[in-house]
Structures are given as structure tokens and as C-alpha cells.
Image: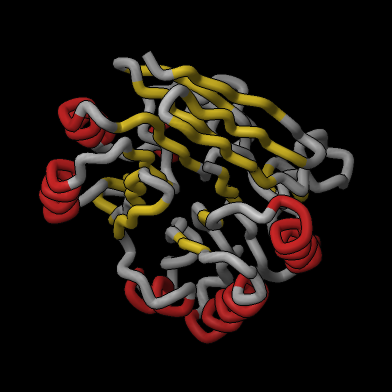
Length: 266
């Protein structure tokens, strides 16, 4: 089966997205690139569904403003001809709260699961604890029960990374790995390994393309739609086409920072 992944749209004020003296997130390009993505899905790729991995907006720290940004993203994604499942990122829920942000993006709970094409899919949420993103205890219990109840091969989606990665060389998180990763990721990975049916994990937030394999499970990270990857003022325009079957998974990252990440199941 084929589905598509989009993430780190960062729609917001065009004069934001700066770090280290560089406008690394080309926020002003977000709505145009998002609209082009929708056209490509409807007219060319035609996936079974789309997953938005979060950070749909570049928050302004103001609930009314951020609500408007999130509603703009929801309107554009509403033109998709196939289902779209949206996760929350740290920017999405900063001023609005998780429940309101999730409702704007489609009315789903901040974490959920669904079945399609013979596979099971899990979308994880997070909460902040002591400055780190964690999967709360009640969600860990839900995850364990959800995985146990499904007899299907499973793919897990998360905004934050779940693999152990140093972040060496990452523009945003070099030397700050704990800001890029789920704080209790070891506990989450333990549940995924225990289930014995999790085939892959796909995450966002880090703004680069990456594949790590831990305990036999591939952990994919895909880059941002608006990342100014080469500091040349050109947005990555990135989104991914994922081909999945019982033999393996291929994550084909399109745009100006392309990558083909592949893992065959043993």
C-alpha cells in the first residue's frame, strides 16, 4: 500500500523562523508549498491516506493568532481527496492546548490509531514534563492495550524522535538531543518491541532525513516542508511517499532535499 507523509509545515508570520542568524524555516513559503502538496496528492500520487506529523504552525504564542494559523492549515488540507490524519507538534499546542489544536485539525484525540490496507497505524501524542517531551503514563497504558488488541503489522507515527540519536551535525539540535527526542523513549520502544508486530516508526521535528534501526525496528525521520536546508533561501519543499507491504518499507522523500530510505523486514 502507499501513503504520504507531510510534516513541519510551520505556517505563520513570514518574518519568523530564524536561528543562529539564519531564516532556517522559510515560513512565508508554507501555505504555497502546502497547497502544491495537496494538488500533487490529488492529481499525481493518489495515496490511500496522508499523515501530517505535526508542527503545522510556527506559533506566535498568542491563542487567537495561532488558532487562525491552524485553521488555515486545516482548510488547505481539507481539499485532499483522501483521508488526512494529523498529529500535534510542539508549536501546534503551545498556546492552544492539545485538545483544541487536535479538534481544529480534524476532531481526533491527540493520540489515536486506525486500520487500513491490512495494517494497523498508531499516532502518538506527548506532554511536557520538566522541559522534555514525554509520552504520559496513561498513553503508555493505552499504547500497550492498543498494540495487544491488534493482530496486524503496525506502523507508529510520532512528532518527536523515539530512537537514540546523538543529533551530531543537526542544525537545530546539535548538542541538544533531549530537545529532539521523547524523554521516555526507552520505555516506549520497550512496548513496541514487546508487541512484536511493529514494522516501522516515522517521526518529524528534527528537520533532516534519517534512518536508524534499533532492536530490529527501523526509525525513520523526515525533514520539514519549509527547511532552508542549504541556507540559500530555497525551501526543501519536502514530503514523503511511503510504500509498505509485508516484506518491507520504502520512504521516498521528495523535494529539494531528497532521500530514499528503505528497510526490508526479516
